[in-house]
Image (cartoon, rainbow, N blue to C red; front, side, top):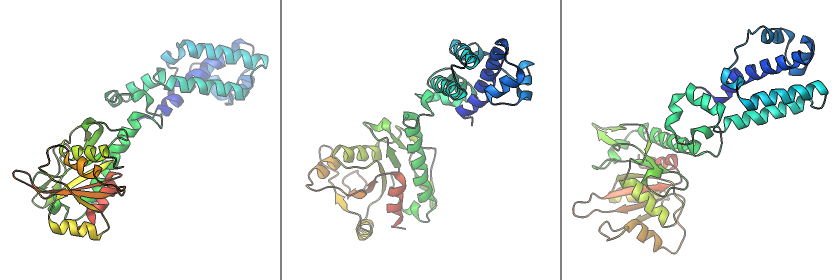
Length: 301
């Protein structure tokens, strides 16, 4: 794991300082004056002068870096630029080079795994799509840990298998919902999770979640478990509203039953169907995120 900030420290700064030290020496600065201007020791300046510091050729050859070195060197030499202003100018360029530019290219090369993500250049952006995607995956993992570390969860897995899913905030389809590929199955009394959370791998539970969201429910996660009257009664006793829908309804029964309500849905609630010909009865717990949904199911254990 390599952070883009490490590339700033290991590649950009040594190169920028080496170029600027050379520029200032060419302008008549002494080694001591160069050290004061750059805020480093004279021995460090000596290393720059003698080529003892690794210089990244791509950074050194970048026109913008060269222009900044020239501008800062001239400003420091004439007194028109203070060291604080020089620092700000360098910071501005660094931020620019991090945004889908030279430093982000170097980051991808240092971590080839990033290339598989759309928008990886914005990895350091707190509002980036990549960060949101990874937060959703992480949330599903936390929910799974809660379930698989709880004794008895395997007994709540229906014959069709369970899936714990969570959506992106602006989810419009199944591809925007993370779940477990292949579903979670009961294997000899043990809940077996076949793989890491992925997007677009759940149709069954993801469809129920999307229907609830389309009906106006403020939910982002869901989990399916077995249905029986006792399960519903225990969930109701724990304070969760349980809403029955008709599995044989012709179009989107979950959305229909939720839209028919004239009051707001709670943060976490349950929808269930009691089965029909060829359809296994199932209970669905829906809530704001995967760990919250897992906590609701754990009241049954």
